[in-house]
Amino acid sequence: MSPSRKGDPLEMKRINRRAILEALKGSRSLTRAELARRLGLTKSTISSLMDQLVSEGLVLSRGDTLRPKSQLGRPGVEVGLNPAGAVALGAELGVENSVVLAVDWTGTLLFREEWGADPRTPLSERLERLTQVTRHALQRHPEALGLGLALPGVVDARGWLHYAPNLGWRDFSVAEALQARLPFPVHIENDANSSAAGEVFFTPRQGQLAYLMLGTGLGVGLVHAGTVLRGANGAFGEVGHWLGSSPKRCRCGRVSCLETEVSLRAMLEHYHALGGKAKDFWEVLKQAQTGHRLAVESLAELGRALGRLIANLAVAYDPERVVLGGAGAEAWDYLQQPLRQAVEEHAFLRQHQRLEVQPSLFGHLAPAMGAAALVLHSFLASGGLREHPASPVAMQGK
Ligand SMILES: [Zn+2]
Image (cartoon, rainbow, N blue to C red; front, side, top):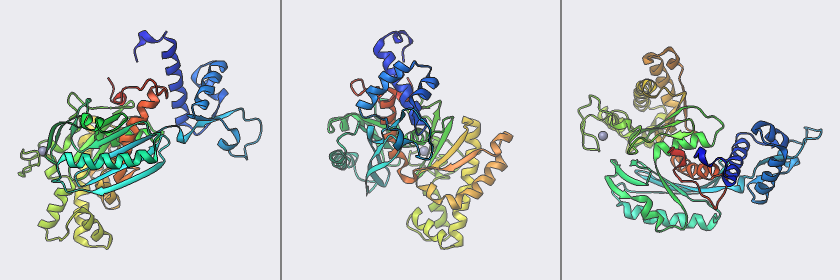
């Protein structure tokens, strides 16, 4: 936000509306007086802005529905975000799965449709099906502000997909292709980045977060001071392609990338090499759940490898917390203990020994939830003013 525009009344209004919406998002409900105090605004300013926000349907002003009846006394006028006030669509085209969902800005899931995909399907076909399902979602939620789409590859701020190694897609303007087919704003993001954004947007916890995406491949999304870091080309956090010492060739064409050792694909290969029989990660997980020793040990080995990786991330990014996401997070019960042990054993700083590591809140839906969060975040950043949509890349910083 340019400081030179601070005197601009419209800009002031936007800044104040944003501050109100952010305060309400961080707490279930407040009185107008509490809001005025907290934001350092006069009661009359709050009153006039609140009247607008209520009339636009973004805020609810109903003391008795927002605060439990047991709290008697004169509560003042209670206000809170209207959950239905902002809805966005989120989608993911994953290596083998796709989803479109609708979610409101309090994180309530309103619509969800998932389908499988063969990784050899051309991008154009995947986009065609995505467009159809998105239109269906739009019929159900015509109020949606836009679509966020997560992709398993390097995406830049213009929505240009540089490279998705696990799908072989390269150099294509996904944003442009989708924008031409859909009647509202489209924002494209890397899957680990969008997942990280969702984890921050839909919880009151801020601070630096590293989101470790464990799927067919491996990647990291990093949120710092509310901003998703993307680097010069969108390749920030592509740790799956850190070079290690493995002799194996990676899907990116190079030899010894980290994801040839640490990923669900690598775990499955290792499992087969030990004599285990399973067609995919999900089958290994099922076997582990029935107590199959080899399956449990293979997941524990993956947990130890993740722990060493997290010890590396701790010195690369020094995050306050790490969230494990992607399909691999569904094996959390089997990964957790060996992972924590390895983090403790390999920590560089004493503080890193107890680095907080949790599974993602949204399971395998995290990339799509996060992609929707980017749309909601930009709406909130624009003060909830639809006639002045903020850049959909607002959360990526400038
Ligand atoms: Zn690679």
